[in-house]
Image 1 (cartoon, rainbow, N blue to C red):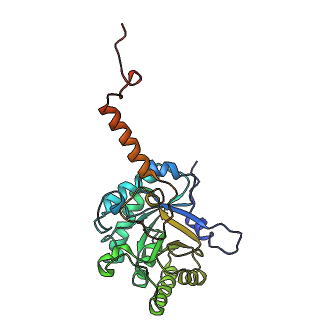
Image 2 (image 1 turned 120 degrees about the horizontal axis):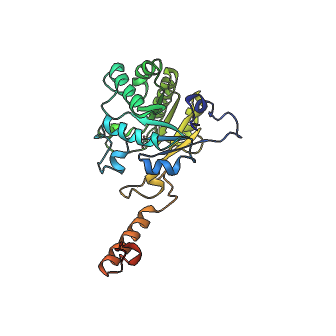
Image 3 (image 1 turned 90 degrees about the vertical axis):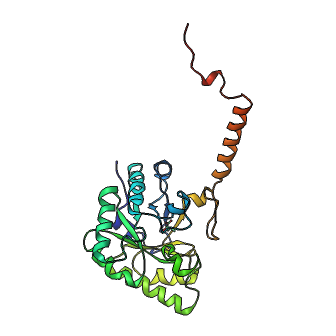
Length: 272
Ligand code: KIV
């Protein structure tokens, strides 16, 4: 039975009192991983970080709409519980609200996801309003926006000065008033994230944004140690799959070379 959390359920998870549980979310891109995490998180984001973690690019800019749709559909097929959000990739929404609608409607139609996420603050309020008025639920994304890597010059913490933090507050208010049902806030000081969380009516989902957001999100490849290239300070590793894979592959290869594999348990014979 399909028990997915709806946009309304997620809105209701805004932490009103201390007894409410924060939203638990993970970024995940494949059917295999999605099956494993199905029962354990409220939201799965099919994130464009797949460009780096599974496609080996240096950043997320090369990810296409077709890639997002293929992975989004695989994750939807393999789950029945969490709310599935699919990232809108770089170049698929910035030009105009109409272009954004065409891309977002393809994602919704071809994946079966419940919502889409786009990066941007006040400058995207009009687009967010346009889409959400036309049946496309939008999760916002402010703070560190990886699709702006070339203008930022690196993956740096945002909102460290008064000017930057008031710009972030303004972005959060603008996109929530425009209709975003929740927003990711990435790599900003805890104090700034707390102020934002208290000042807007929709849930904030933090990644490197401290302890007081309405929910948390991390990348499954990061928490499992499946992506060795770079680990941000805000990641906690809960597993070490990299090491397990390397050890298993080493054992296999050694056994092949020493003729210990295959054994008689792994072969077919002709019955006499
Ligand atoms: O693509 C992604 O992994 C994301 C997270 C950083 C929230 O957008």
